[in-house]
Image 1 (cartoon, helix red, strand yellow):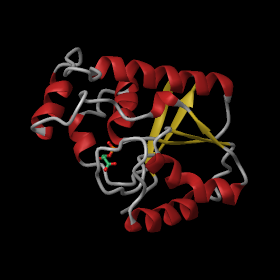
Image 2 (spheres, helix red, strand yellow):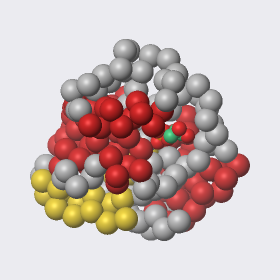
Image 3 (cartoon, rainbow, N blue to C red):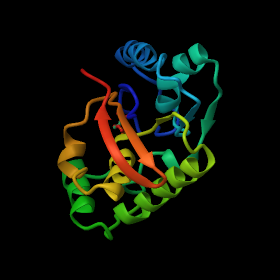
Length: 178
Ligand SMILES: O=C(O)[C@H](O)COP(=O)(O)O
């Protein structure tokens, strides 16, 4: 899932959910509490952790922090034109802005993290709280229909249920309805 709404500040690691984000996180708990969740994994960023804190409490699971699910780093500092900067990396998967990750680099660490989870918890239901770009990059690796346009229409939060047979993606369904 992509985390609930957080008001933008440059503090990637520490910025919390907004008031609206906390309300939606409550809805996330309601949606997932009966899905027989075996594990909850999150990006280390606060907005992702806070999105699943209520769920973790409800289903009595610990949140496991995995670095591979942090948001893709677009550039070292703030970019001048975000739209242009994001389009450029999606047009050329090998391109990286200074200090940032290319699509290929970020995709690799995201996919490595997913494959490791599948190996470790095969057959179990795992909630992953992550971010828009890295989530779509992971999905894109398994099915290229999940692309830049798909990313553009994501909501915050957004939740997709991915079913794997070993490391083969066999089904995707959207669980969140805005
Ligand atoms: O508001 C945010 O958290 C970001 O600007 C966009 O979301 P992301 O964490 O999914 O990239």
